[in-house]
View 1 (cartoon, helix red, strand yellow):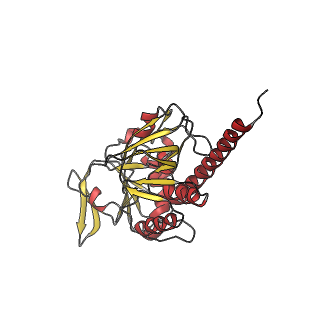
View 2 (cartoon, helix red, strand yellow):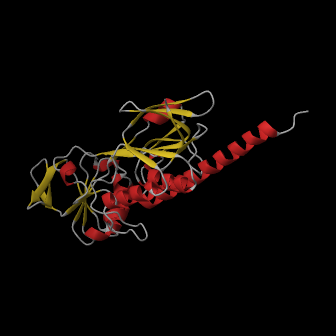
View 3 (cartoon, helix red, strand yellow):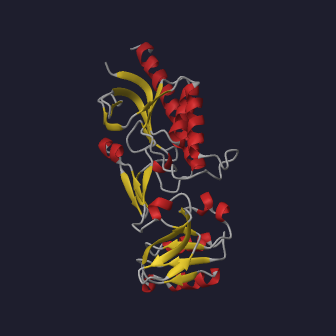
Length: 316
């Protein structure tokens, strides 16, 4: 028999666990399907989350799983591989292990994957001294020698941002030509004191398990202790596509169209966290999960009240 839940949450990161916590406390029978692929797994700590600043991501998620368990929320380590909307507006979710569950409502907090530039050493150092977000890591590496690896002209923005945390910043143009920089780019880089180095990057120089330099294809090495990169965001849209949700194209990936609560264009399906945008930090993702779950709970409540009224209301 297919197991029935009032809500199924797909994704066990900050957004999914936050949604599950709200739903559990609202006495909703809830299942969390967690594939165990958090975006921030390479990071040693999370920052900017009031009272949780500096907490290791794995510790944060473990605490969240303990909290939802207190309210009877079930969590399964599995992957949702298929989902379909039934004739009654509810949902059938199939898991990789073969289990099938029924959900009255869904929260999809499936997140995204970061596709790193294919430069030797970048993937191995990512989350350590190869970083992507100054708000996440800037304080910890402040005043060090920064490099920024350009992969599109938009990398200029990243170089300008990180200059707030160090005045020793070099922008390696890599696959971007000098001709692609606008006059405003050149003016602002100069104002920020950012050194611009043309030429393709061949790889990183690592000594004693720490980044010490960036090597160009011509053999030139520039001493740097921290490198910022801009991964390509790859949203996990498979379930949204299977449900026929409307998607929108952005410069940072394709994401579902949602309203202010996270409700997608598919009735009964909410999205939260990095499933709706590449820049959702942990604190934002948790808030989005809370908001989606509170809205979902209210919708279920009024749907049930209306159903009772429809059964009991006098017919003329």
